[in-house]
Image (cartoon, rainbow, N blue to C red; front, top):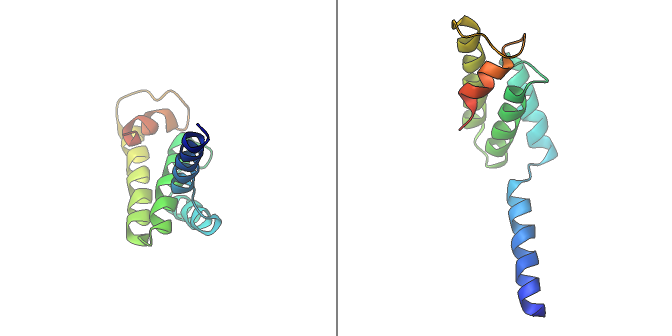
Length: 100
């Protein structure tokens, strides 16, 4: 029983570490998303930061910047579409375009 508990705990710790991003990667990701014009304080910005930070942690800066470009493009598409966004800044519509 004790051995099974240890394996479960090890699996939980490993999964949490795999999802965590380094502080430096998060800082780079926030900067990239902001510089590409993604609106801070929106779910789209948060999605952009998480996705870009994972790419920075993997050593793939090109992918990180591509995530920022996709987030910006989704916001622009939402703002130019005839759909009415749920939020004034268009973040709700853009969030729907970036969700996978």
